[in-house]
Length: 161
Image (cartoon, rainbow, N blue to C red):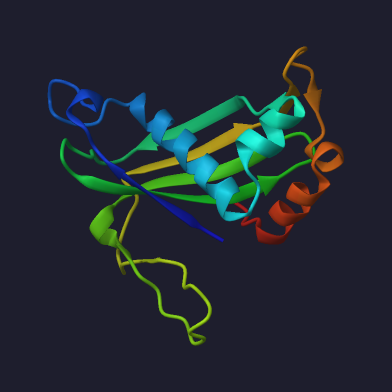
């Protein structure tokens, strides 16, 4: 499963060369992870924060391959790369908007997942590892024990990185 989150590069997100400042991709990734959870029917604000937990970043590995520029439209493509009891690794890739096309579904009732145009390559490719912690103590908790329904959904859609 992939969730595609659109982004439009604003002037304030760029450096003097007119390209997205590298740290701003982290903001795009954060929005995309929230969209990913929403697509699973699991609201971050209600289900995680509302239950007294947070999900901070534990580790990030990012490869910048080609720039996205001011005024361009992009898409963050998010999937689950690894599902562990204490950590989740998301694969997050940025593509130009024109590299993502609407998919076709055999069944009209099924909403097709957008597909990548043949030959499309990510501009940015990242593995973002997050954990779940108690809000008050920052003590890590097991996703499998604390949110077994989310853990099971992740287990069903994981794509090894």
